[in-house]
Amino acid sequence: MQQYVEHAVERSVNYSIKEYIENRKINLVALLESSISNHYEDFSNDNRIINFETDNRKVYINSNKIMLSRIFDNLIRNAYKHSKSDLNIELKSKNKIEIIFSNDLLYSDLDIERMFEEFYTIDISRTKGNTGLGLAIVKEFTNQLNGKIYAKKKNHKLYIIISFN
Image 1: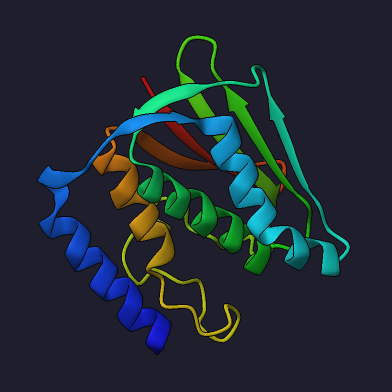
Image 2: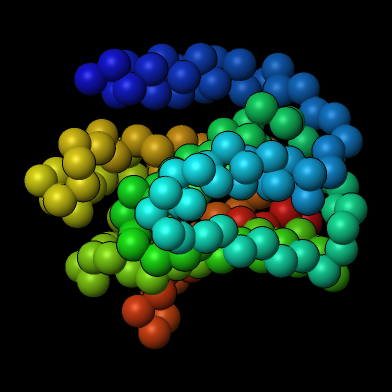
């Protein structure tokens, strides 16, 4: 319940300060590596790994570090809680910045059209009491940072793709 309240407060605060988002030059590789290290122990304790690939060691974006960190942490945490496989993260920066999170689907009935909606969960008994706000926050933060986010399922895998122009 406390996590639900924290998320609700965070959403309302971020809606109200949307026009005050402070952007700075950020190295996405370093930020992603930091988020990955925050979750390394959980994955490692389950004999799972987080694979990270990038086409460039320094990929800079003018954005908000706190919001990006929250996006990455929420996506990594969701992958840990809602899959039993390794997590793959790929950062592409050729024509536009794309960050692809992929892992095996644990629930084949996941509705990718609704998964970013507030309070969406597949089945509360299977999802360890989640509130369904994590991905809604990810989508809202991505939109506030002028990015795009979508999900797709292919070959029993879930892909969540974030892009910035």
